[in-house]
Amino acid sequence: MLKKYISYFGILVFICFSFFYTDKAVDIVRRNDPVMKSIMSNKDNYNISSVNAIINDDEVIPGINGISVNIKESYNNMKKYNSYNEDMFIFREVLPEINLNDNYDKYIVSGNKSKNQVALVFKIKDLEYVDEINKILLNKNVVATFFIDGIVIDYNADSIMELVNNKNEIENLGYDNEYSLDKFFWTNNLIASLTKKDPKYCYTDYKVDSILELCSKYNMYTIIPNISVDNYPFLTVKKSLENGSIISFNLNSDTIKELPSIISYIKQKGYNLVLLSDLLSEKY
Image (cartoon, rainbow, N blue to C red; front, top):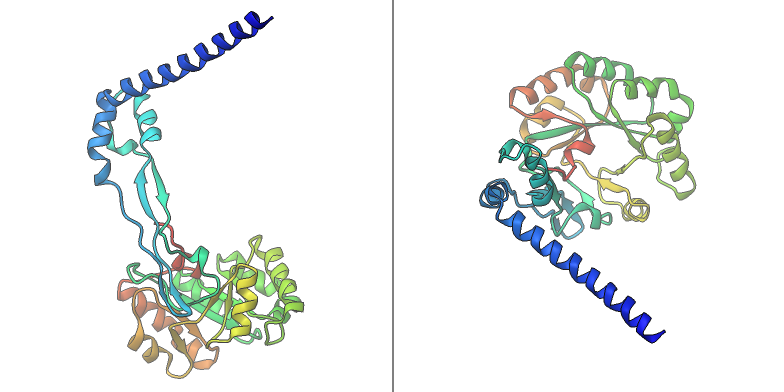
């Protein structure tokens, strides 16, 4: 019986070594393949380093993911045609060491400055100007992010759906003018039911620890805009516009009157108007 077990053990050891040496042999062959050699010689030309998020006390500005060549997948892709082709590189994203995922407890105050993007944000506490804003955005072919009070969503779902259908973004502005735990999930659920997406952001015009603590506890980011528009909307935007701007509007007749000109000005300066989630995305 002992001889039998020894025999089985010997066979098992042989199989393991066979797999090991087979893998080594395949690896040697692969490394000497002209396609692999070309990949290894050129991969660094396509790798892009990630950029860390910038942290200043309790504030954060998003970083940017890097990209690197997935050597194995790129090789397998090219070997289908048995030739090197730089258009067939396959990449993977590389997260920065410091990124938003680790910093829910900080206020986001801007998008990344290296992105030529800005986001329009509207605070909705009633429906007085919503239809007019929606028409302006449609006419200008741009989208925006709407932070909407839960009580408005509760009683005006059809109107909010108009914004959603036009590809705008809906986020949580609390319920009845405040962020409170008992209504926080209710508002989130209202938004999710309309948009089919979980909300990601809370909003405040200035630092409020209770809002930051509540939102960060449930993995939501708290936004403070770097451009807040009330009186003289066009002049305010023109004075402060820069890469990564989060432009927040208090809704009034001046906003409605000057919004078309503001959008035209932003476009003329070469900025891309994007949703807040796109502005703050760390994807390359």
